Image 1 (tube, rainbow, N blue to C red):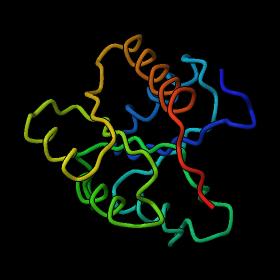
Image 2 (image 1 turned 135 degrees about the vertical axis):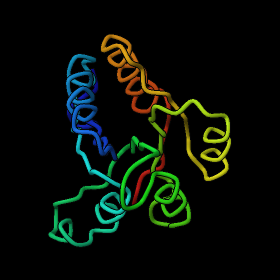
Image 3 (image 1 turned 60 degrees about the vertical axis):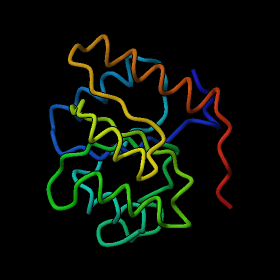
Image 4 (image 1 turned 180 degrees about the horizontal axis):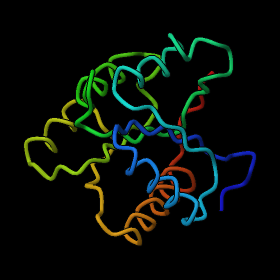
Length: 150
């Protein structure tokens, strides 16, 4: 488990409420700890990251340690949001893991071209989802050294 001082904040952009619930339960089951927050589409993700609209109040949108990004969402899809994140000098160092049901070669190639750090196809079994959450946590918060936002 990660020390409380380093507890990660994971921001998940996911429009499906069932997938959000399963992700929260899998994160808890994985033992990773930390804080999992949700936005429901790419437009809301960008509002969160840029402290706009419902996220304008100080402290309402702390900087995430990792973004889990679904591709197919209403208003602004994951591809558009990813392109904006990686083009923004203040946001481009936040790791973005595309976490989607897609397995299409065209999607995989495109998201890496846009600067995603990883592409993971959502597992269908809960125990596999727990394993993915545990592995994500170990890799991004215990193995990798990330830049510190000043």
